Image (cartoon, rainbow, N blue to C red; front, side, top):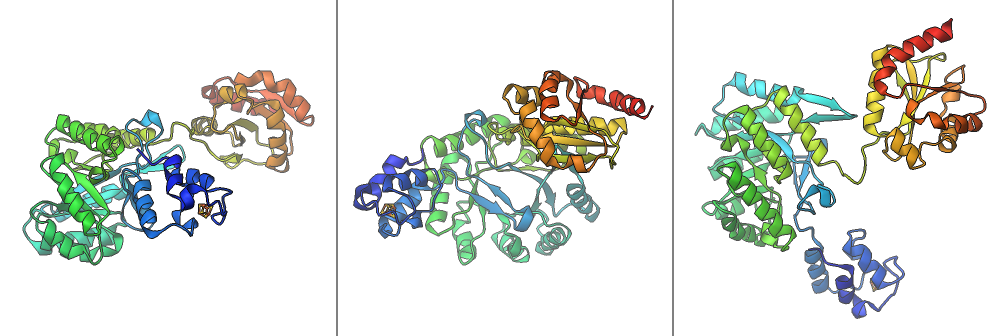
Length: 455
Ligand code: SF4
């Protein structure tokens, strides 16, 4: 329940009638509208009294606060979600998939897990899918052993870490080892909250607040906020899947529907503590991807269990309003030369990767011209007027393909054979060839075509 522009304008100078334009907007009303959607910073208006500024800052803050764990290119940002269901708008920050390592595991097991999280990476429609957090758990009772684990992980990877210990002294000394990478401390409870606040107040670190129920979390987050600790993650401790769905949904609804600030934080989920075997854990994790933790911790995974989970995460956290697309340009497939075939397709990522892999399968080096259709497939792009002869002609001319090949033969997808005439008019120097209707036919089509050209 974010503040509306009409609510904001009433709080601006002279009730929103000053209209001095110093913020760069023609009126206070225009500024208020932009402010309500997060499109401008509050301090652009120099005339806001401090109390109004503080009030607006609080009111305009996202209902689920952002939390960043880790540093540099691997930093994980969670929170700032705006909807209960992904189809309402979009989910924003993909949850981190964490691998749990206990300090009771052997050196060989620890090395194997570090190796696994570093090596299990999957190329997928131009992206690299991977698990991206390590959760380090103090179980041995030996502080030196836990610190050795933290050091080993920090030296061996640059991933964000969750430090997990019931012993606050252990937690705080482990934090010193990896403080530069902004670890997430697990967990603040009603029994240790004063000690943790005293330990981190000077240089706050993100913390997980753990409670035996959702209600138990509320006074804890309130106390942390009052102490100036804003980066909070919630763990309502689910014992089974039913409790997990109930509590995660309750927290999300309280934050978004009631704008209830004490629960306006991202959450963490632990399939590793609810189920023992790998497959059950991954199934729980798949449920958590939908509802709603920002970090999901598994005790183990392999390539066959991790890949489907990562693909599901990608699909759920892809903005449904914006189809995945690739850049408009000429792509080289298998080192083509100036006699290689030239094909054209749309820039929907799936279309591009399927066509490119079929060309690779044909073993015929080719040029693949990818026309920007705003992420639409070939046929939809044609229906929307974005893959027509009139638009492809200018693209081919400016793409630079004419300088890369000696011939002038352009292969178009069979599904849009009807644009051949338009294209012949738009590209009079080019022979327009209607290619296969389906990408799966390319592997057989291209070698035959090249053979025919040679003969
Ligand atoms: S600077 Fe402030 S008072 Fe002036 S127009 Fe902008 S919002 Fe209104």
